[in-house]
Length: 234
Image (cartoon, rainbow, N blue to C red):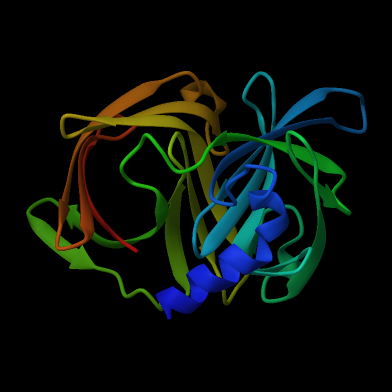
C-alpha cells in the first residue's frame, strides 16, 4: 500500500519535480481577507495527509481544512476530514488544479501561490501522526486509530500542526501550529497560531521525544503547564 502511495505521489507530482520542487514538506503562501488584512497560509503535505491553514500576521487563527489526498495529473483531490469554516464539507471530495511555477505551485480555485519551506528535512518526525495513547496520572489509555474523534499532528521538516476533530459529527475542536525542531532527543514547538487561546502564540515548548517501535512517545509540559505523556502513531 505504501509503495502504491509513493508511486502515485511521484507520478502525480511529476510536473513539480521537473521544476526541482518536492511534493512533500512545508509550504507557505500569502493572501488578504475581505477587509484587506494580510494573511499567512501554511500547508503541510505528508505521504497521506495535507492541511491548509489561514492565520493573520499577528497569529490570530482564521480557518483550516484538510484530510487524506490523492494526485492524478494536475488534479489534487482532497478527502475532507476536517473543515473549521464549512463543516458540511467533511466527508466530501474537493478537487483543485495545480499549476507549477518557478517558485512552487499555484492552487485553483483557492488562488494561492505556495512557495516551499522545506522538503521534509531537517526535522526527524515528518509525516501524519494520530494520537493513540495518553497517560492520565499513572494510567495509560489507548485510542483506536479508526475512532470518530481524532487528534492528528502533521509535520514537515520544519512545520507542525495538530488538529482535533470528529469525522462523524463533523465537529472541529481546535488546532495549533508553527515551526519545530528535533535535537538530541528534544522536540521543541514554536507556536505561530492557536485557535483556542491567542495568548499562547509566541510560546516555545520543549518536550522529550523517542521513537519506540515506530511510535512517537512525547512527554513534557503542555502550554497550560500540565504534565503530559502522549503516544502518536502513523
